[in-house]
Amino acid sequence: MKAMMEEITKEKLTLDLESTTKAYKLFYKRFHPIKSKNLLFFSVFCLIIGVLLSLLTFKTNKSDFMLGIFLVILSFYYFYRYSTMYKRMAKHHIKCNSQNYTYKINEEGYSAISNEHNSSYKWDYFKEYKILNDMIVLFDGKYSFVVFPKVSYTDLEFDLIKKWIINKSL
Image 1 (cartoon, rainbow, N blue to C red):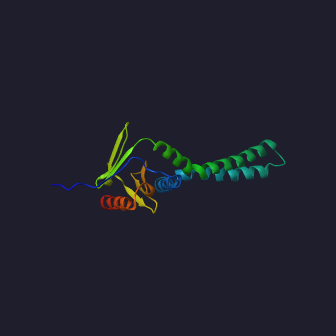
Image 2: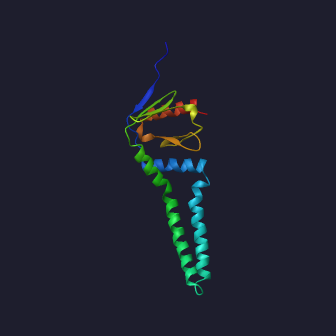
């Protein structure tokens, strides 16, 4: 007879803003290093062009001077959007995952079950993982990731999940 497999079942995961933001930063820096910096590059570009245009046309052409000022203001706006980008994504992620899901984790893999759909993945489906003190992040490639926040599990459950992921992944 096959021995009973241990399983961890949670009705709701506690996703906090700080750890979810950290997971998004990890994901984008690892899989989309250029895309995650586009707003920053555009912000710096607008700032440089705007300052140069403003300084060079201050006394001669008021419309070009105003365009330069507009570009400087636009650069600050884009820099603000860049600095809050991961936090905004994390807020949306938390809002979307606050639905009624039942999470089942066992030695074979991970499942998220709701009334609308059922997602099940084996551990070897994930391409990479990152184990941090406060969470485990599993990356399935360039398009998504799964977060297991430590606050949702007891220390024994969290250690067991780590063991399963390390033994079965990659």
